[in-house]
Length: 490
Ligand code: HEM
Image (cartoon, rainbow, N blue to C red; front, side, top):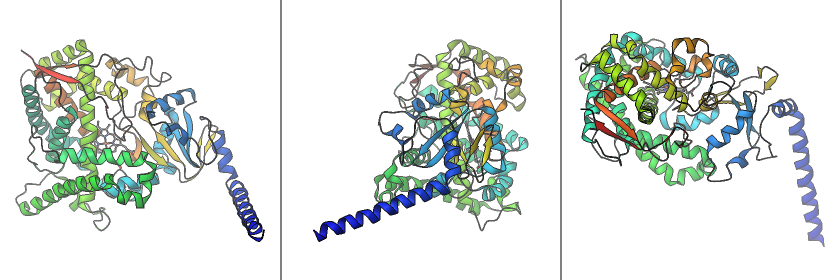
C-alpha cells in the first residue's frame, strides 16, 4: 500500500512538472508558435511535427516536395519543433538570399564542416567572407581565360576515353565524369597536375573518395540514429567516411608538399595558394589551406560530374537537339580546339546546359538560418528557423515555368530570360553566399559537352524526362544510373 502511494506521489510530481514545463514553453514561445502555425503546410503532430512523412522507407523526398506546389510559395515542415520553411516564390527567395538576417548557414551544416572543414560553404559569413575575397581572383574572367586550354586538353582526353568505351552500356559514367572534373579542378584551382588515369579502376582513388564522402554525409543526415554522436562514432559509416577522408586529405597534403618543394620555380604562379598567401585579409590562424581546398574540390567535382551526366542524357533523349549542337560545334570550331572567342558563339550548347540544370538542379538543397524575425508578405518567420531552398521546387513548378517537364532550351533565349524573375532559376544560388565557381563550371561544361558531341553520338535507354528517377542526396543522384552509351561519329 505504502509502495503504491509512493508511486502515485512520484507520478503526480512528474505530471505536474511536465505540465508546468509545457505551459511555460507554450507561454514563452507563443509568438513563434502562432507565426509558425500561420505558415501553410501539411498537418503537423505534437512532438514529431511532420517527420512522419519519412516513416515509410520507400518514400522519396521529391514526392513529398510535389505536395508543396499547392502552397503559395512558402510551406512549413516541422522536424519536431524545429521549423524548416521551404520557400519557392522567387520574390521570397530573392529576399532570403540577399537579407542580412539570413546570411548565415544553419547549424545543420556543422556535419558538413566536420568532414570538409571550416572553409567555404558551411562556415559562418564572418569566416567565409575573407576566404571568398582571397580566392575570388581565381574565378575572375582573366583567370578563366587561362583555364580554357586546360579544359580543351582534358576534354580531348575524355572524348578519347569515351571512344574507347564506344558501344559499352554497363559503365559507371558518374565515376568517369568525376575523374574528368578532378583532373580539371586540380589543374586549374591548385595549379597541380594530379596524375589521373581516366581509365583506371582503383576503387579508392580521389574521385571515388570525394563522391563517397558526399554520399555518406547525406546518409548521415537522413539517418536519425547517426546524429547521436555515440552511435555515429561506432558506426560502419563513420569508419568508411574516415577512410575516404584520409585518402582525400592525403592527396591534398601531397599537393601542398609538392608545392613547397617546387616553391621558387614559379610553378604555382596562378594557384589558389598564391591568392591566399598574398591576401592580407585572410587570416591563416583561423582556416588552414587544407580547409580551403577540401570544399572547393568536393564541390567542383561532385556537382559538375552529375551535371555533365544529365546534359548527356537530355541530349540523348532529344537526338534532333543533339544534332543541332553537333552542327553548331562543327560550324563554330571545326576540328580545332575551342578558343575563348568561340565560347559566346556556342550559344545552343549553353542553353542546353542551362535547361538541363533547370530540370535537374545538381545542388538539390541549400539553406539559411534566420537570426531575427523575417517578414515575407503576411508571413512572419521566427528567429532560429531554417529557410530551405530546393531549386527543383521552383524549376519544376508550373506556376513559374510553362510545361515544366518539357525540355526546351529556348527558355534561355535572351528575350525569354529578360521576361523572367532571375530568382526563378537558381541552380547556383544568388547573393553573398552564391556559388563561387559558377562561371568556371559553365565554361568547363560547355567545352567538354561541345568536344564530346562533336566527336561522338550519345544514346540513352531512358525514354523520357519523367522516367528519370532522382534520389535525394545533397547532390543529385540517379538511382538507376545514367543508362548512356556512345558511338563514334564517322
Ligand atoms: C554545375 C556545377 C555547380 C553547381 C550547380 C553549383 C551550385 C552551388 C550552390 C547552389 C552553392 C550554394 C550552396 C549554399 O548556399 O549552401 C554553391 C556554393 C559554392 N560553390 Fe558551387 N556549384 C557548381 C560548381 C562549382 C565549381 C566548379 C566550383 C569551384 C570551382 C564551385 C565552388 C563553390 C564554392 C566555393 C561554394 C561556397 C561559396 C560560399 O560558401 O560562400 N562550385 N555551389
